[in-house]
Amino acid sequence: MGKIKVAIIGCGTIANAAHIKAYMANPNAEIKYFCDIIKERAEKAVKEYGCGEAIEDYRVALNDPEIEAVSICTPNNVHASIAIDSLRAGKNVLCEKPAARTYAEALEMQKVQHETGKVLNIGVVNRFNTGVNRIRNMIQNGELGEIYHVYVSFRSHRSIPGLGGAFTTKSIAGGGALIDWGVHFLDVVMYCTGDPQPKTVTGQAYSKLGQDMENYTYVSMWAGPPNYKGTYDVDDFVTAMIRTEGPTISVNGAWAQNIGVNEMYIDFLGDKAGVRLQYGKEFTVYSAKDGALLETTPKYTSTDMFQNEIDGFLDCIRTGEKLPSHIDTVILSSQIIQAIYDSSDSRSEITL
Image (cartoon, rainbow, N blue to C red; front, side, top):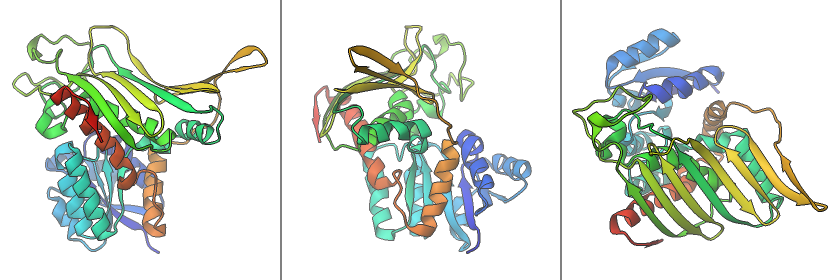
Protein backbone atom coordinates (compact mmCIF):
# COMPACT_ATOMS: atom_id res chain seq x y z
CA MET A 1 0.00 0.00 0.00
CA GLY A 2 1.11 3.58 -0.61
CA LYS A 3 2.01 6.18 1.93
CA ILE A 4 -0.71 7.54 4.20
CA LYS A 5 -1.33 11.16 3.22
CA VAL A 6 -1.77 13.43 6.23
CA ALA A 7 -3.11 16.92 6.95
CA ILE A 8 -1.74 18.88 9.92
CA ILE A 9 -4.52 21.13 11.22
CA GLY A 10 -3.02 23.84 13.40
CA CYS A 11 0.64 24.76 12.93
CA GLY A 12 1.51 26.03 16.41
CA THR A 13 3.77 24.76 19.17
CA ILE A 14 2.73 21.11 19.54
CA ALA A 15 2.54 20.57 15.78
CA ASN A 16 6.10 21.82 15.26
CA ALA A 17 7.54 20.31 18.42
CA ALA A 18 6.10 16.83 17.94
CA HIS A 19 3.57 15.89 15.26
CA ILE A 20 5.23 17.18 12.10
CA LYS A 21 8.68 15.78 12.90
CA ALA A 22 7.24 12.40 13.84
CA TYR A 23 5.25 12.10 10.61
CA MET A 24 8.29 13.08 8.59
CA ALA A 25 10.35 10.42 10.34
CA ASN A 26 7.83 7.72 9.46
CA PRO A 27 8.48 6.23 5.99
CA ASN A 28 4.79 5.35 5.60
CA ALA A 29 3.52 8.94 5.93
CA GLU A 30 3.42 11.95 3.65
CA ILE A 31 2.25 15.38 4.82
CA LYS A 32 0.13 16.84 2.04
CA TYR A 33 -1.37 19.87 3.82
CA PHE A 34 -0.36 22.30 6.53
CA CYS A 35 -3.47 24.16 7.70
CA ASP A 36 -3.74 27.19 9.98
CA ILE A 37 -6.20 30.07 10.20
CA ILE A 38 -3.09 32.25 10.26
CA LYS A 39 -1.87 31.25 6.83
CA GLU A 40 1.64 32.58 7.45
CA ARG A 41 2.15 29.77 9.97
CA ALA A 42 1.15 27.17 7.39
CA GLU A 43 3.36 28.78 4.76
CA LYS A 44 6.25 28.82 7.20
CA ALA A 45 5.79 25.08 7.79
CA VAL A 46 5.81 24.36 4.04
CA LYS A 47 9.04 26.30 3.67
CA GLU A 48 10.69 24.85 6.76
CA TYR A 49 9.83 21.20 6.13
CA GLY A 50 10.03 21.28 2.35
CA CYS A 51 6.75 19.55 1.67
CA GLY A 52 2.99 20.01 1.57
CA GLU A 53 0.63 22.82 0.66
CA ALA A 54 -0.40 25.71 2.91
CA ILE A 55 -4.16 26.17 3.43
CA GLU A 56 -6.35 28.21 5.76
CA ASP A 57 -9.56 26.15 5.66
CA TYR A 58 -9.27 22.55 6.92
CA ARG A 59 -12.26 21.58 4.78
CA VAL A 60 -9.96 21.74 1.75
CA ALA A 61 -8.08 18.76 3.19
CA LEU A 62 -11.29 16.97 4.18
CA ASN A 63 -12.56 17.26 0.61
CA ASP A 64 -9.40 15.66 -0.76
CA PRO A 65 -9.97 11.92 -1.20
CA GLU A 66 -6.23 11.27 -0.93
CA ILE A 67 -6.15 12.40 2.71
CA GLU A 68 -6.52 9.45 5.09
CA ALA A 69 -5.40 11.02 8.37
CA VAL A 70 -5.45 14.35 10.16
CA SER A 71 -3.64 15.61 13.24
CA ILE A 72 -5.65 18.23 15.12
CA CYS A 73 -3.21 20.58 16.88
CA THR A 74 -5.55 23.54 17.42
CA PRO A 75 -6.84 25.31 20.53
CA ASN A 76 -9.30 23.22 22.55
CA ASN A 77 -12.44 25.06 21.46
CA VAL A 78 -12.39 23.56 17.97
CA HIS A 79 -11.18 20.04 18.81
CA ALA A 80 -14.68 18.59 18.78
CA SER A 81 -15.97 20.35 15.67
CA ILE A 82 -12.91 19.60 13.53
CA ALA A 83 -12.70 15.99 14.76
CA ILE A 84 -16.39 15.39 14.03
CA ASP A 85 -16.15 16.99 10.58
CA SER A 86 -13.06 14.89 9.83
CA LEU A 87 -14.63 11.62 10.92
CA ARG A 88 -17.74 12.29 8.87
CA ALA A 89 -15.52 13.06 5.88
CA GLY A 90 -14.03 9.57 6.23
CA LYS A 91 -10.71 10.64 7.76
CA ASN A 92 -8.83 9.02 10.65
CA VAL A 93 -8.09 11.45 13.48
CA LEU A 94 -5.38 12.05 16.04
CA CYS A 95 -6.61 14.93 18.22
CA GLU A 96 -4.33 16.60 20.72
CA LYS A 97 -5.28 16.49 24.40
CA PRO A 98 -7.66 17.27 25.96
CA ALA A 99 -10.22 15.53 23.79
CA ALA A 100 -12.47 18.57 24.16
CA ARG A 101 -13.37 21.43 26.48
CA THR A 102 -16.17 19.47 28.15
CA TYR A 103 -17.26 15.90 28.73
CA ALA A 104 -20.36 16.54 26.59
CA GLU A 105 -18.20 17.52 23.62
CA ALA A 106 -16.00 14.46 24.12
CA LEU A 107 -19.09 12.22 24.21
CA GLU A 108 -20.26 13.66 20.90
CA MET A 109 -16.84 12.93 19.39
CA GLN A 110 -17.07 9.36 20.66
CA LYS A 111 -20.60 9.00 19.25
CA VAL A 112 -19.49 10.07 15.78
CA GLN A 113 -16.47 7.76 15.95
CA HIS A 114 -18.80 4.85 16.64
CA GLU A 115 -21.06 5.93 13.76
CA THR A 116 -18.24 6.24 11.22
CA GLY A 117 -15.88 3.50 12.38
CA LYS A 118 -12.86 5.68 11.64
CA VAL A 119 -9.95 5.99 14.08
CA LEU A 120 -10.21 8.66 16.79
CA ASN A 121 -7.17 8.73 19.04
CA ILE A 122 -6.45 11.43 21.63
CA GLY A 123 -2.96 12.81 22.23
CA VAL A 124 -2.43 11.30 25.68
CA VAL A 125 1.16 10.73 24.70
CA ASN A 126 2.32 9.30 28.04
CA ARG A 127 0.59 6.04 27.11
CA PHE A 128 3.48 5.66 24.66
CA ASN A 129 6.19 6.55 27.20
CA THR A 130 8.73 3.82 27.99
CA GLY A 131 8.90 4.49 31.73
CA VAL A 132 5.14 4.78 32.13
CA ASN A 133 4.68 1.43 30.40
CA ARG A 134 7.26 -0.16 32.69
CA ILE A 135 5.30 1.03 35.72
CA ARG A 136 2.06 -0.23 34.19
CA ASN A 137 3.62 -3.65 33.60
CA MET A 138 4.90 -3.78 37.18
CA ILE A 139 1.41 -3.03 38.49
CA GLN A 140 -0.23 -5.57 36.17
CA ASN A 141 2.33 -8.22 37.19
CA GLY A 142 1.53 -7.67 40.87
CA GLU A 143 5.00 -6.41 41.80
CA LEU A 144 3.55 -3.54 43.84
CA GLY A 145 0.73 -5.61 45.29
CA GLU A 146 -2.63 -3.88 45.64
CA ILE A 147 -2.52 -0.26 44.49
CA TYR A 148 -4.78 1.34 47.07
CA HIS A 149 -4.02 5.04 46.51
CA VAL A 150 -2.30 7.28 43.98
CA TYR A 151 -1.11 10.77 44.86
CA VAL A 152 -0.69 13.32 42.06
CA SER A 153 1.22 16.60 42.35
CA PHE A 154 1.69 18.99 39.44
CA ARG A 155 2.44 22.42 40.79
CA SER A 156 4.64 25.31 39.83
CA HIS A 157 5.55 28.57 41.53
CA ARG A 158 4.24 31.09 38.96
CA SER A 159 3.87 29.57 35.52
CA ILE A 160 0.58 30.74 34.03
CA PRO A 161 0.93 30.38 30.24
CA GLY A 162 0.02 33.19 27.85
CA LEU A 163 -1.75 35.35 30.42
CA GLY A 164 -4.80 36.92 28.81
CA GLY A 165 -4.67 34.62 25.78
CA ALA A 166 -6.20 31.34 24.67
CA PHE A 167 -4.83 29.32 27.60
CA THR A 168 -6.53 31.57 30.16
CA THR A 169 -9.86 32.04 28.36
CA LYS A 170 -12.40 29.42 29.43
CA SER A 171 -14.48 29.67 26.26
CA ILE A 172 -11.40 28.62 24.29
CA ALA A 173 -9.50 26.28 26.62
CA GLY A 174 -12.35 24.89 28.71
CA GLY A 175 -10.31 25.37 31.88
CA GLY A 176 -6.87 26.11 33.21
CA ALA A 177 -4.28 24.11 35.12
CA LEU A 178 -6.53 21.05 35.46
CA ILE A 179 -7.46 20.65 31.81
CA ASP A 180 -4.00 21.69 30.55
CA TRP A 181 -1.61 19.87 32.90
CA GLY A 182 -3.94 17.71 34.95
CA VAL A 183 -5.23 15.76 31.96
CA HIS A 184 -1.78 14.24 31.43
CA PHE A 185 -1.28 13.31 35.09
CA LEU A 186 -4.75 11.83 35.50
CA ASP A 187 -4.34 9.88 32.29
CA VAL A 188 -1.05 8.37 33.48
CA VAL A 189 -2.79 7.24 36.67
CA MET A 190 -5.75 5.76 34.82
CA TYR A 191 -3.54 3.98 32.29
CA CYS A 192 -1.15 2.47 34.81
CA THR A 193 -3.96 1.25 37.09
CA GLY A 194 -5.96 -0.34 34.27
CA ASP A 195 -8.43 2.48 33.54
CA PRO A 196 -10.70 1.84 36.54
CA GLN A 197 -14.22 3.25 36.41
CA PRO A 198 -14.57 6.45 38.49
CA LYS A 199 -17.33 6.36 41.12
CA THR A 200 -17.29 9.65 43.03
CA VAL A 201 -15.38 12.90 42.64
CA THR A 202 -15.00 15.89 44.92
CA GLY A 203 -12.84 18.86 44.07
CA GLN A 204 -12.26 22.57 44.16
CA ALA A 205 -10.73 24.77 41.49
CA TYR A 206 -9.41 28.24 42.27
CA SER A 207 -8.73 31.24 40.05
CA LYS A 208 -6.58 33.49 42.21
CA LEU A 209 -3.11 34.62 41.18
CA GLY A 210 -3.89 35.62 37.61
CA GLN A 211 -6.95 37.73 38.35
CA ASP A 212 -5.02 40.98 38.72
CA MET A 213 -3.18 40.46 35.44
CA GLU A 214 -1.11 43.64 35.37
CA ASN A 215 0.24 42.90 38.85
CA TYR A 216 0.91 39.22 38.26
CA THR A 217 4.65 38.75 38.84
CA TYR A 218 6.42 35.92 37.04
CA VAL A 219 9.89 34.77 36.04
CA SER A 220 8.98 33.42 32.59
CA MET A 221 5.84 32.80 30.59
CA TRP A 222 5.51 30.14 27.93
CA ALA A 223 2.87 30.89 25.27
CA GLY A 224 3.39 34.56 26.15
CA PRO A 225 3.81 37.50 26.21
CA PRO A 226 0.90 38.58 28.41
CA ASN A 227 -2.12 40.32 26.92
CA TYR A 228 -3.41 42.58 29.67
CA LYS A 229 -6.51 43.43 27.64
CA GLY A 230 -7.40 39.75 27.38
CA THR A 231 -9.27 37.34 29.63
CA TYR A 232 -8.36 35.39 32.74
CA ASP A 233 -11.27 33.21 33.90
CA VAL A 234 -9.71 29.77 34.42
CA ASP A 235 -8.27 27.80 37.34
CA ASP A 236 -4.67 28.28 38.43
CA PHE A 237 -4.98 25.79 41.33
CA VAL A 238 -7.02 22.63 41.79
CA THR A 239 -7.42 19.97 44.45
CA ALA A 240 -9.50 16.81 44.16
CA MET A 241 -10.26 13.36 45.53
CA ILE A 242 -11.45 10.61 43.18
CA ARG A 243 -12.82 7.22 44.18
CA THR A 244 -12.64 4.54 41.50
CA GLU A 245 -13.39 0.83 41.32
CA GLY A 246 -9.68 0.48 41.94
CA PRO A 247 -7.54 2.95 43.93
CA THR A 248 -8.47 6.31 45.32
CA ILE A 249 -6.69 9.24 43.69
CA SER A 250 -5.77 12.57 45.25
CA VAL A 251 -4.75 15.53 43.11
CA ASN A 252 -3.05 18.84 43.85
CA GLY A 253 -2.07 20.99 40.90
CA ALA A 254 -1.17 24.57 40.15
CA TRP A 255 0.03 26.72 37.31
CA ALA A 256 0.79 29.31 39.96
CA GLN A 257 1.02 29.34 43.76
CA ASN A 258 2.72 31.43 46.40
CA ILE A 259 5.03 28.58 47.33
CA GLY A 260 8.36 28.53 45.53
CA VAL A 261 8.36 24.80 44.90
CA ASN A 262 7.89 23.00 41.58
CA GLU A 263 6.64 19.42 41.92
CA MET A 264 5.75 17.15 39.04
CA TYR A 265 5.34 13.60 40.27
CA ILE A 266 2.94 10.69 40.78
CA ASP A 267 3.12 8.30 43.74
CA PHE A 268 1.66 4.81 43.28
CA LEU A 269 1.12 3.33 46.74
CA GLY A 270 0.98 -0.45 46.83
CA ASP A 271 0.92 -2.80 49.82
CA LYS A 272 4.06 -4.60 48.57
CA ALA A 273 5.96 -1.65 47.07
CA GLY A 274 5.50 1.92 45.91
CA VAL A 275 6.67 3.93 42.91
CA ARG A 276 7.36 7.62 42.52
CA LEU A 277 7.34 8.73 38.89
CA GLN A 278 8.99 12.06 38.24
CA TYR A 279 6.83 13.29 35.38
CA GLY A 280 8.67 12.98 32.08
CA LYS A 281 11.71 11.55 33.83
CA GLU A 282 12.80 8.50 35.80
CA PHE A 283 10.94 6.55 38.48
CA THR A 284 12.00 5.06 41.81
CA VAL A 285 10.71 1.86 43.43
CA TYR A 286 10.47 1.64 47.23
CA SER A 287 10.12 -1.77 48.86
CA ALA A 288 11.28 -3.98 51.75
CA LYS A 289 13.01 -7.37 51.74
CA ASP A 290 14.68 -9.52 54.41
CA GLY A 291 14.33 -6.82 57.04
CA ALA A 292 15.82 -4.10 54.84
CA LEU A 293 14.28 -1.16 53.03
CA LEU A 294 15.13 -0.98 49.35
CA GLU A 295 15.19 1.97 46.98
CA THR A 296 15.78 1.27 43.29
CA THR A 297 15.88 3.62 40.30
CA PRO A 298 15.74 1.45 37.17
CA LYS A 299 17.90 2.36 34.20
CA TYR A 300 16.56 1.63 30.74
CA THR A 301 16.64 2.89 27.18
CA SER A 302 13.68 5.08 26.28
CA THR A 303 12.17 5.66 22.87
CA ASP A 304 10.55 8.93 21.82
CA MET A 305 6.94 8.85 22.99
CA PHE A 306 5.66 11.25 20.32
CA GLN A 307 7.23 9.11 17.61
CA ASN A 308 5.68 6.03 19.21
CA GLU A 309 2.30 7.77 19.27
CA ILE A 310 2.40 8.82 15.60
CA ASP A 311 3.77 5.45 14.48
CA GLY A 312 1.00 3.69 16.40
CA PHE A 313 -1.65 5.95 14.90
CA LEU A 314 -0.49 5.27 11.35
CA ASP A 315 -0.21 1.53 11.98
CA CYS A 316 -3.70 1.23 13.46
CA ILE A 317 -5.22 2.88 10.37
CA ARG A 318 -3.95 -0.09 8.38
CA THR A 319 -4.42 -2.87 10.95
CA GLY A 320 -7.60 -1.79 12.75
CA GLU A 321 -5.88 -2.24 16.14
CA LYS A 322 -7.51 -0.27 18.95
CA LEU A 323 -4.77 1.67 20.75
CA PRO A 324 -4.80 2.66 24.44
CA SER A 325 -5.29 6.27 23.28
CA HIS A 326 -8.62 5.49 21.59
CA ILE A 327 -11.49 7.80 22.54
CA ASP A 328 -13.34 4.88 24.19
CA THR A 329 -10.61 4.68 26.84
CA VAL A 330 -9.58 8.31 27.15
CA ILE A 331 -13.18 9.43 27.67
CA LEU A 332 -12.76 8.49 31.36
CA SER A 333 -10.28 11.33 31.88
CA SER A 334 -12.74 13.79 30.32
CA GLN A 335 -15.45 12.51 32.65
CA ILE A 336 -13.24 12.94 35.74
CA ILE A 337 -12.10 16.44 34.78
CA GLN A 338 -15.70 17.51 34.13
CA ALA A 339 -16.75 16.07 37.50
CA ILE A 340 -13.99 18.00 39.30
CA TYR A 341 -15.17 21.25 37.73
CA ASP A 342 -18.82 20.39 38.44
CA SER A 343 -17.97 19.55 42.05
CA SER A 344 -16.12 22.84 42.39
CA ASP A 345 -19.04 24.83 40.97
CA SER A 346 -21.64 23.07 43.13
CA ARG A 347 -19.39 22.68 46.18
CA SER A 348 -20.58 19.11 46.51
CA GLU A 349 -19.47 15.58 45.72
CA ILE A 350 -20.34 14.22 42.27
CA THR A 351 -21.49 10.62 41.88
CA LEU A 352 -20.76 9.11 38.47
